[in-house]
Length: 77
Length: 374
Image (cartoon, rainbow over all chains, first blue to last red; front, side, top):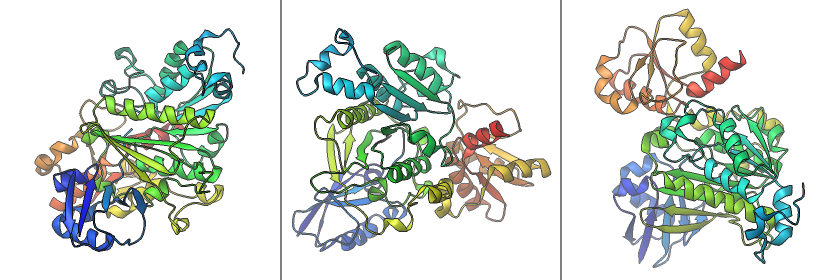
């Protein structure tokens, strides 16, 4: 199972890329946990998760080739 | 207000078959409030005025600085030091003298928001801080006003429409469904700190004006329950479908009274564990005892402060200059809006955990507002 992850805003600086792939994550809680292990700085910031472009607020099951996007808030105007 | 048949000003949009005289009349009847005459507000205001939105309100308490000019294209070098809302109104009247422009040359707060918002059909958020964004969102949610949201940083922007019912799904969402809680200000950056490419707010602000025009005239498909993220470097757009948060009611003011009692500054800074001082307590403290006051803004930032003595150490120089800060008095760090000073206190207390240091809540913006009132 392969999940594609797209990142936005300051998250692309934390992971030093605009996208990455994770294998063997079954749901969004597992995905967050794995990301926190790989990039501890992610734990300090707030972001919203979208699975296949739909924003989710609870743990959501993931399927092969799902696209998860991580969107942080920013406030510049 | 009605436009005359021989008015050539709007000819090129009236001849669009989807638009026509009906849509033009709707624009002329519309009242749009633009909050913040900055990077997003300037292009939004220009296009809304040119398109013939009949009444435009502008809220901004700030003055034009030289660092605004690369992106806030309503202003010219001669405008430095002038009030943004008034200056923008003068420029807009030159673009289109046939519309009404209302200037609100003061800070938007939960005490004045309802009265102003009630006058308008639609609100455009072009502000630059989370406290004001949550305030605008909540007021629009309670009043059921469509809100066109935009935000920028560095090379990326977001645009979306809130409080607009999708007639097919009967779903209506807002900023709290996107970001239920504000981020920790110690981990976020403003354009003052992180920078922004000048054209980016031009693009996002223009998209906000486009959405406003679509909502008012009823043409096309507004960005209802959606947010678009734009990356200028990649030249890519990505859209997100917003779904309602079912338990957001717990933290969200539900009526005018709850809104009036909601402290947005606190809501957006309470999770930092950094000592803060309110404007009133700061005014008392600096009269009562000798304190060290430190300005962490960049050296060219306005307004100039003449009312009290302070040391200027821009935030990015602070890590190297921590040892030079006198430690015999209590220390108050301040900046423009109270965000960078939070980071300054954190940096200082990591080095000097036993010393008392505060961040001035709301910064110079709040301090000026307080002193104008008293």
